Amino acid sequence: DTQMTQSPSSVSASVGDRVTITCRASQGISSWLAWYQQKPGKAPKLLIYAASSLQSGVPSRFSGSGSGTDFTLTISSLQPEDFAIYYCQQANSFPITFGQGTRLEIK
Amino acid sequence: EVQLLESGGGLVQPGGSLRLSCAASGFTFRSYAMSWVRQAPGKGLEWVSAISVSGDNTYYADSVKGRFTISRDNSKNTLSLQMNSLRAEDTAVYYCAKGRQQGGYDAFDMWGQGTMVTVSS
Image (cartoon, rainbow over all chains, first blue to last red; front, side, top):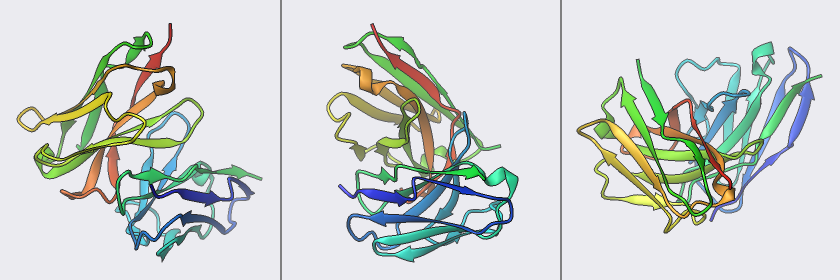
């Protein structure tokens, strides 16, 4: 199985800050990497697929990069609605696996 | 409007069974692979199972293999998850999720609201 490890587990930031979240795969997954945002009591929302492709309707302040084993999600200028938990997910092989999540909190 | 609506959750005793359903609307259901993803209270996301567009190919997490069965009825736009031999650790919100690409599994672009399954005596 491919293990996905996110860092940090939590981060505090202010509105307007630039934030980067990292996801590392235990083996190469090419660009089969997606990022999700989840708010309390809600279903996850797809932000990025294929490591760097922005899902329709997602603000351009979100961007993704990486390939192989190391990936990043960057929010260029945090907005109040961005405080949530973020998950990476690999789809290179079954079983599909998620990272443990990164909680983005208001400083 | 694209919508996924889960049902069938509830309280069940350890060792019991439950069948979850997911009603899809607003898209060509038969063209997309589908999955179940669960989230235990206060925990992260765990993929459970996936099924191909035709239903011929199914995939399971090791934690549920041999106990859960995924199926689909393309004539009724419905996804199902039969859960047997339930354990306390199966307690979670269960989401059905739509594959982003036709026939593909790369990402989940639509999720239901979730249905809670509680396994407890």
